[in-house]
Amino acid sequence: MIRVVLPAHLRTLARVDGEAKLHVEGQATQRSVLDALEAAYPMLRGTIRDQVTQQRRAFVRFFACEQDLSHEPPDAPLPDAVLTGAEPLLVVGAMAGGG
Amino acid sequence: MSRVRVLVGTRKGAFVLTSDATRERWDIGGPHFGGWEIYHLKGSPADPDRLYASQSSGWFGQLIQRSNDGGKTWEAVGNKFVYDGVPGTHLWYDGTSRPWEFARVWHLEPSLTDPDMVYAGVQDAALFRSMDGGQTWQELPGLRRHDSAPSWQPGAGGMCLHTILVDPSHPGRIFIAISAAGVFRTDDGGKTWRPINRGLRSEQIPDPTAEVGHCVHRIAMHPSRPRVLFMQKHWDVMRSDDAGESWQEISGNLPTDFGFPIDVHAHEPETIYVVPIKSDSEHFLPDGRLRVYRSRTGGHEWEALTRGLPQRDCYVNVLRDAMAVDSLDPCGVYFGTTGGQVYASADAGDSWAPIVRDLPSVVSVEVQTLS
Image (cartoon, rainbow over all chains, first blue to last red; front, side, top):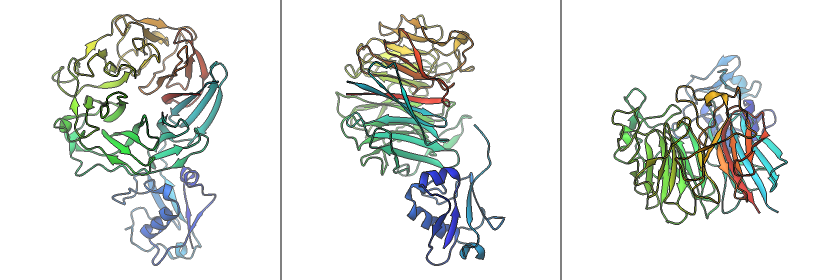
């Protein structure tokens, strides 16, 4: 079971209370976790990564185990602690301030 | 008894304001989508409980929300806006070419007859349409394939398609406006388009009377006379009596002819409303006074409407989609400000009162008259 922590706006959008818990077939990577997340919560399509290019949106970051995974290849395996469910994958809206 | 529902889009969410026909006591619903920019929301003329909303965020992009119960509950529908084919380029602010890139939906225009059909005007400028209640979107690419498109440039707010007017009496005719390209018309349901900007004069572009390049802020029509169009241009208030083939200036005695919204009285096709703004470099009201100007003669002669509106120390703006009318008698007129006030007049503009004073900055106002 993969645990994903979404930013507040996306929890509201997806009507998720707390963490999203996902079953991911095969190797858990950023791509496969996001595929599973979007399959479970279709309203999140396009909010974390572009629907055509699959690129992470510029102001969205991925953290886990106190590491910034945002620039890891999307098909790289996630840390073991995320795979076992000991640690969540954090989807974070960049601290960009503004109005 | 009739009721009125006012749909307000703000920088931080949507609000639904409702009243009976007296328009004296209002119920304030919301915020919906708190914290998100709601550029526009609008109801279907064919099913007033079917609403569409454009929800966006610099972080999480574009969403489209749909309600089937008049705005009580909402569901996210399709948000995949992909330009048809190779997007091509337009001009950037500095005159260099730049690829078309989707940013957001500025305006949603539901079909007059089919609740599941809705148009979306987007930035970078293009027209999309959904035939399935917003689940999927297809571009009408003829507009963006017009020969002039590579020369279109953005206005200060981005290169947005912000106005969509569907002609109720001429099947296949749609008017759209783009900042800063101008007005375009199709007579074949969106397959082919042509610019209709003859008579516009814009000193900010190299050729002031060019076929395209005019920063049109808003156009409006009365449904009983769809060949008559009114326009608030960046500077200048204009009208056309021939479906956009030619335009004449009607700014007349306005204190300034810069502004954003323009709208038409529901029962008097020659009665129009604008909100003059001091200038394009200041973007606030002249003299600190909030004045709506009304012409009962289709332009040229304007009167200031001030009763109930602040007449000192007021420096808000009223954005292009932030004015609307109801169809009660007398006609109600509504507008929202960047200061978060929504004002209503239940007597065609003679007097005004705030429905609500302290919303987030208002981007859009639409009104539904419900029986």
